[in-house]
Picture (cartoon, rainbow, N blue to C red):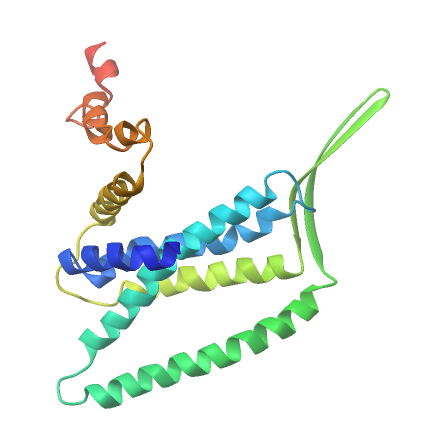
Amino acid sequence: MVNVLFFRVWGRIADRFSNKSVLTVSGPLFIISIVLWPLTTLPDRYVLTIPLIILIHILAGISTAGVNLCSGNIALKAAPYGRATAFLAVNGLVNGIAATLAPIIAGASADWFELRELRFTLNWTSPGHAWQLPAFDLRGLDFLFLLAGILGLYALHRLLAVKEGGEVEEEVVRNELLVEMRMALRSVSTVAGLRPLFSFPYLRVKSLLVHPSGKDASSSSS
């Protein structure tokens, strides 16, 4: 449901700026939604598991809408004049091969990682008492999520080589996304107390706290 809603949001932002600018924001969100999965079990289910899964699906819905929409648009814009059919056919072929091989490779890798585990724990010992907290635990599919995140970072690095007109800074797209989200939430919210929250002038407060020279206003006055 979030994915469907954000197709329109990302589409408006892409029309205003560029597809690459949208990917610089939606791409990292997609990677974050992947690497959060190992945190759902540390090493077993805990009280934050279900809320974290809900958050992951929300982030995935938001990000995949932008990634799917704008990656397809970039392929259309990059197609050479007079040879667009062949160009898009090759693009679809590469996507199809990757989509076919990826689950096979991931499945074989999951079987191999099933009996492997990497764990970091915090230990505290005192007279008559011992305390242990799992700080980091990877096993099975957790390794695949981290590998997918690394591949996603490499894909973002390669995105820098793509040139497209209308590119803007990542912060501009983030601010525009926040504006679109605030407008969407204000339109669906029927709770009176939520409307002022989404109308709160965060940028105005930020400008008051930060001096134009880049230093803190309080430190400059002192």
